[in-house]
Image 1 (cartoon, one colour):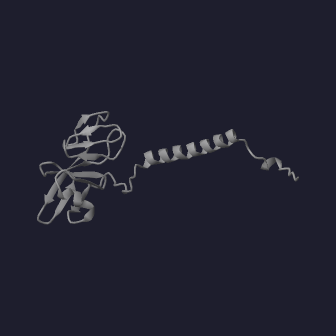
Image 2 (cartoon, one colour; image 1 turned 90 degrees about the horizontal axis):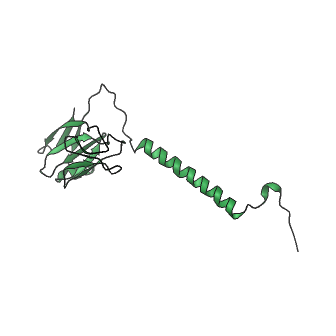
Image 3 (cartoon, rainbow, N blue to C red; image 1 turned 45 degrees about the vertical axis):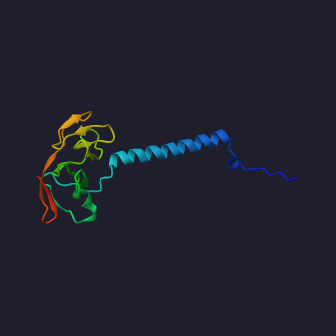
Length: 155
């Protein structure tokens, strides 16, 4: 029968200690990812200087904007959510909830912008309908040109 003696730094650890270490490590990783996700909120758009006015055009022929071809559809571009209401009108407001900065969605059935995180709701002009948000969304001007198949959004 052979017996081997393990060096003090190579001794096996007991099961409880192992799971405690693994659990702490996984918890730290998840917490770090959560905090990083909350800070970034998926915002890949460059920061626009305060003096520069927002002005961009969406082409309705582009695959990325095809949702705007139907009433109730919406897209997010340049930190702006552009939606087409039930009646076919185009509206645009800032894409982040004024409460916690979460990206908004557009609920076509009620023609409202909706925050999926804390359930704030805004009308098509950006006015708060239901909190916890207390500040309105920034509203942008929209000029559709259905013949040219474009929608211009500007301040």
